[in-house]
Image 1 (tube, rainbow, N blue to C red):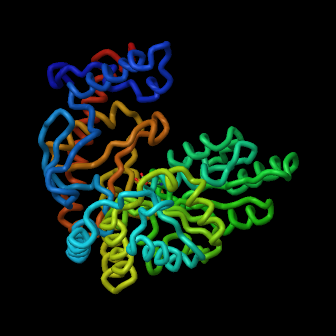
Image 2: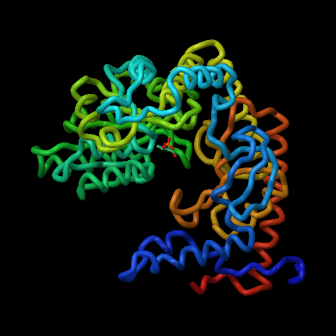
Image 3: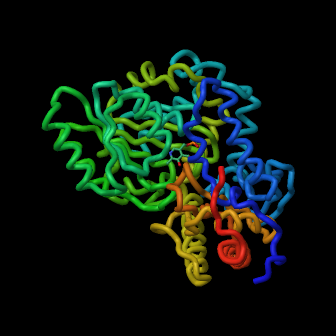
Amino acid sequence: MLKASFNYTPPDALTGSMRDYRYPRGPDLQSRIAGFFKWQNLRRQHSLWPFSRSTEEGPATVCAARDDAGGKMRGVNFASQDYLSMSTNPAIKKVAQDVIEEFGVHSAGSAALVGNTSHSVLLERKIADFLGMEEAILFPTGWAAGYGVIKGLVRSTDHVVMDALAHTCLQEGAAAATKNIYLFRHNMVGECRKWLEKIRAKDTENGIMVVTEGLFSMDSDTPDLVGLQALCDEFEATLMVDVAHDLGNLGKDGKGFIGDQGMLGKVDLVMGSFSKTFGSNGGFVGCRSREVKEYLRFFSPPCTFSNALSPMQAATVLKAFEIIESLEGQVLRDKLMTNILSLRRQLVDAGFEVYGDPSAIVCVKMGSEGLARLVSRRLPTAGLIANLVEFPAVPKGQARFRMQVMANHTEQNIRDAVASLRDAFEAGREEFDWMNSEAEPLKATA
Ligand SMILES: Cc1ncc(COP(=O)(O)O)c(C=O)c1O
């Protein structure tokens, strides 16, 4: 390949990682972080910063968007989290309009004071019933629910035993609650048992929370929830499962993997988000007693000291549950699964490797960040909007594209997406190989 075939791309724009800027040093909190912006801007100048994009027509299956330098793109959209296409569902939009008319737009208070509305009270009941649990409590976001359930219940002398790939909200909640955190390798129940044995051999006085997800958001796989709950029962620990990505859209009647594994009403604590399947910001914790709910309300800071969901959010999520429980919900889930299976099959046929099991998260393996960024640079012109995922969302060296499927995607959208990704990948790999051979090998100087 001739050197003149490609515009010059500085190696630092391909090799650095956000990890390099995680622990800046120096006494001035503001000036010591400047290196990050410099590196980010280098990437931006070379069209290698595919984050902070904005859609111009909402998260539709085909939409226009802009990157954060103002560059326009239009293409099939596999970057939005709207698995059952609830954000544009006419019935949901109608509820939103009606509730705004009746209640205004704001809750104007924390749920511990007067921030609840008749809609949020009904929604809490609906979630508890859907999960077969005694109670549920709402949080302003899914992140707040994950953070808040751990911080609300775990104290500094307690222990958190957590899957190593658990979401950042869970990791941050654990870190804020205690220093006693033990990570077990992803989905390894045996390793979780070893930690529990070790902890209980020394400490029978304090609590243990075991934390995992129903469907992992980058790997699309699922733990043995039956095994983990049995371990928790054996060692007097509490299991907490984050169902942000599977509840409502997967499994029989949309009950996710908790349902599929026969664990409805049997997991100690279930936490979830509305932002993937239910068309709204917001989150919840399901629990098995009123005592836990009331304690979280007044001792979980993001519930107690943050404003509650707006009336419109609570009402639209309630409507989303109603749809999910109806025939329309079943049709949407079937359509989603048809799309998922088609996308995975076509990606594999095109020579890509995809992660995990069929779910709305279809991650396509890239590996090297440099390669992934060069492919990503070409996606907007190829007509595909898809998220590049790199550290800190996944370990360094395990970059991937996360394609998120919606029920409203058409077969043509899927064909177009795979063709765009294939074209972008072939051209990106050619440049990557060229940079590693004829040009200077990729080596960061920063
Ligand atoms: C597994 C998991 N838990 C929690 C959250 C947080 O949810 P939200 O974005 O609704 O705050 C997310 C979203 O990114 C997630 O992927």
